[in-house]
Length: 242
Image 1 (cartoon, rainbow, N blue to C red):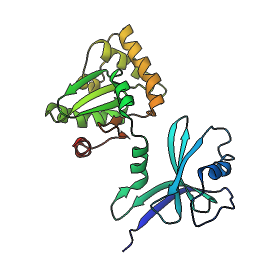
Image 2 (tube, one colour):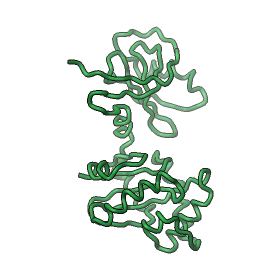
Image 3 (cartoon, helix red, strand yellow):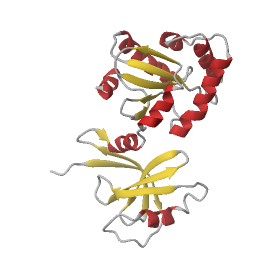
Image 4 (cartoon, rainbow, N blue to C red):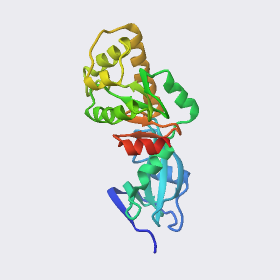
């Protein structure tokens, strides 16, 4: 029996086309169709291929903000913004594809090493990008703490204060670096002295992470280069490093 898919359509825009319905539009033709919609933004249609749902084509757009995933129908007439969920398998196929597209190569992962504020634990290593005043980050940190204490994982913490949302977060990030504090102090909202070394590391982090396509907290970077934003359970984290 054919797999059933649920396609959530957040927005359907008529963009017009005279393309044949039996195959996906070429990247060049699709860019010509879409350029009116993205007139104020530079973009490249990196690829167009069949999506898991018959009659739908997956479109990868490259912008200054990184790679974006969207869909069009096979005729190129409709742009479909939303997610494809495999109901039977209980999988968000769009999310899995986005994670794969934004996987960091080894050279980029190496850049992260220079941004690490502190490391804790033993075992398989992951990076955690976190904001000292982010409520969701606190949840993520508290999930990681027992895994660290049990020696199941080693976490390299990168402090990425989003000042527009959390005005005091940058000072806290700098203080943690300056005073050599760790995960428990971060969870508790540590506040301490400011120093040049801490300020420089935080500024470097703020400048580097967006270039790597990382703009949200909490974000995990796993050994295979997969980048996942949002709070993960202990089970999900351990599954990713096995």
